[in-house]
Length: 315
Figure 1: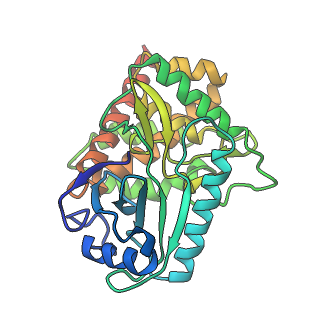
Figure 2: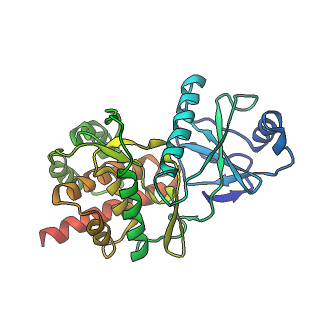
Figure 3: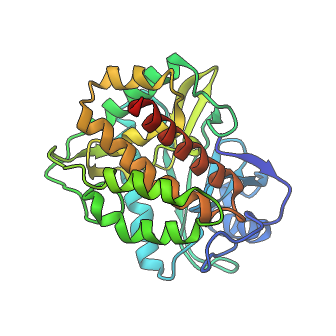
């Protein structure tokens, strides 16, 4: 499962991005019927998801159609979707946890001007809806997932140089934007002080494979255990500390040390995990404050955890 089914004709209702595309259920019905007539009898249901990258619709009980919310170029979008499918196959062969399997690529058509994809629908509930943060079993599962991803051969690939996962100081401009937009939302002076220390942490470990976005909406749980992982298109080499953001986004203070012990993280790697979690969380709070409150609340919770850890360490 990747969200709650919605009776709405299009999701999300409020744009999260200035350049956001929309797609209606009627458009999806027409695209599916024309391009995949074998599914013409299957119901189409919108999914109200906390995700920020795709509008999602269920096709029957087995499939999920994903429509990128941003993008101007069909060829670029198609290459991205092919890369996502390749990443899903690579990860599925490297971990026992479920990964959505690529099923098909759709073409642009009336009502939606970009390529789109179809994946298998996975059972389970997102960690946003069913918080596993206090589960020791989940903490061990998350460590196992991170170890599985790290074990994938980079095949000579290295960090792309874009986004999170390389030099921490490359995040300075983004964080300055975040601090400026967060004056009315957060204790910005205290957060600036925290970042001033984190940004100085050296990076001396070789790149390993990372999922790249281990937030609650991208992991599936059942009975307090990890059962699946979503949005795997970011699978790529980066700082080994990058996927450790999951320790801060997903675990509480009691279970976080279990993950650290399982992975054998040294002090530098652990501190860098705080830095990457900080850089992500700062953006979530203000950017999604009105359009995606669930993501904004996640950012606040993660920042609270980082500040609490800082205070505990000082004591």
